[in-house]
Length: 236
Image (cartoon, rainbow, N blue to C red; front, side, top):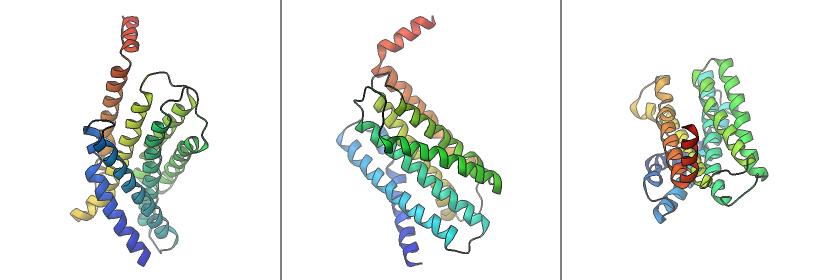
């Protein structure tokens, strides 16, 4: 139990750090010093969250005499770790290849969204088998993100600033995982509440997805004014 306690404490500290700072890169100047420093701090915190989540999840499933409820939530903990890792990786890697002009063929960058997509299907199927709504419906988010990430890598960039838009999508999607994990695991324990409405579990996605769409539309129009003007004229 010693290492479990160590990882649990690290998970809590890193999780709260990520929860408190994730919004800062969103509101400060993009590409500025604060954006980069806080952004990397957030990525580091989420890396620790993911590593500790994997350890605790697998420990409870395979090395403890856990009940079905604990096992189900442990699988969700592992899935959230996969989702947050995949989206953070995507958010970083699109910056690395922002100058690409053709289809992307890096095995890691293609493999991560495929892993997310496959794991989403598996967890969704498991959720149906054990009749846990959170495990049944939340993986749909992962299916969409994994599919869209793979589609981005396999297509030739068509608009200017595509990397900035995808970076925002990746990191804000990671924020969904951060806040959802807190709502599902952290908040009930802090408030000493045994059950939380499933509507509240999906609230982070419901709130953050429109933000993602808003930023995507804003930067697409800002960096591609000529293309948008042509589309508007053609529509008329």
